[in-house]
Image (cartoon, rainbow, N blue to C red; front, side, top):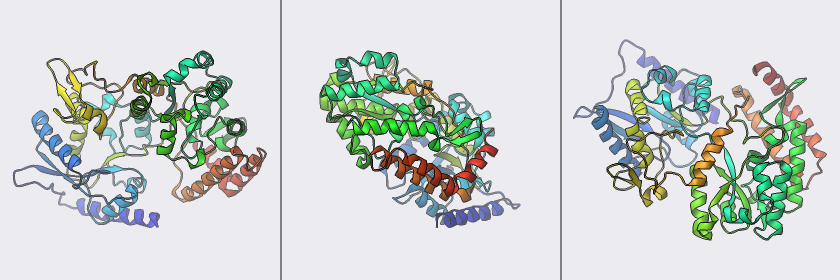
Length: 484
C-alpha cells in the first residue's frame, strides 16, 4: 500500500513538474504587502502549534532585519500519526510545500528528480558549507537531496559518578575498557548493591551494540573476508557477541526484562537505581539524563560518560553514510528555490544560530553587554529545529554560568565525534526492502531467543542457514558487486 502511495505522489510531482517546465515559469505567491509566501511542511510544526507559529513569525522578522528578505511562512498541517505516511497524504492532496522535512518516504520522490540537488547551493553558500560535519559531507555526496546538520547520533554509556567512585574496577575500565574489564565493572555494580542489574536497554540489543560490537570485530555492516564481503549478523564475530550477551543475561548483569522495556521504563530504572548503566544519544539526551538523575539522587549523582569497549576495534559503531535518514529538502517545483536556500543558509549564520539554538530573547535567553545567559525555560522547553553544528558561533559567547550543555553532555558529544566511523552499507533496490525487513525480523527473533536461553547458542547456525535461504545469498552477491 505504501509503495502505491509513493508512486501516486511521484506521479503528482511529475505532473506538476511538467506543468512548470512549460513556457510559463511558476509564479511565487505574494501577500498584499509584498511578502513572498514560503510553504513549510515540518513534523509537529503545523498552524495549530502556537510555538511553531511564533518561531516562524520571529524568523521572518529576523530575516527582514538581518537579510532584508520579505517572507511570510505558511505552515502546512501534517496530521498526527506516522509522519512519513501523513506527509505522503498531504503531498498526494496536491499541496506542495517549498520546504519539506522528511523522515522517510523521500527516496521515491528524489528518484524522479523532484527534489533539488543541494550541492551546488552549498558550494556557493556563505555559512552552510562551513558547518557541515564529515558525515554530512559523505551523505550529501551519496544522496544530495536531504540536509540535516546535527551531531553524529551515537549512543554512549553513562553511569552515576557517585557509584563509579565506589567501584574498585573503575580505574581499570577507564584506562583499558576491554570486554573483560567491562564485565568486571558490571559484576561489581551488582555485588556492591549499587543496582539490581548492571545494565538495561529498551527492547532489543541495539543499545548494547553501541558499546560492545566494535570490540568483537564488527566494525561495519559488511565484513571483509578472504572470500569477499559477509553480512555482519551472520558472521562468527556476531555469534561470539551473542554468546557474551547471553552470559550477561544468565548472570543477571543484563536486565532480564530488557525485551519489554520501553524508553521511559528504561530511563526510570536508571533514575531509581535499578540499573547501573544505560546508554543515551550523545549531547542533549545525555544532558537530559544528567539533569533528571541529579533531581532524583542529588548533585553528587552527576553522570560519568564511559568509553566504548576495546577489542579488535574500538568505537560506537559505523555510521550509515548512504543518505540522511531524515532532513529538509527543497521541492523542485518550488518557484522559491533560491530564496528557500537563502533562509537555510541564514540559519547557519551567527544570528540565525543564536535564534534557532537559543530561542526567544527574554524568554529562553538574555543578552548582557558581553555574553548570553540562558534561562530555565531554555533547558526545559527549547530545541533547535534546524542546524546543530558541533562548533557553533553566536554573536556573543555563552555565559560560563549557563552552558548550553552540562559537562557530561559535552563530553558525550566530543567522544562520539572522536569515534566517528564510516559504514559500508548501501541503498537497497526498492524490490529488496520488504525482503530485508523480514530478514531483520528473523535476526531479532533468533538473537532474543539465544540471549534469553530459549534457544541454545548453536541455534545461531540455523539462523544463518535461514537467513541465506530467505534472500541472503542474493543480497550478499549484490553487496560484493556494489561495495568498492
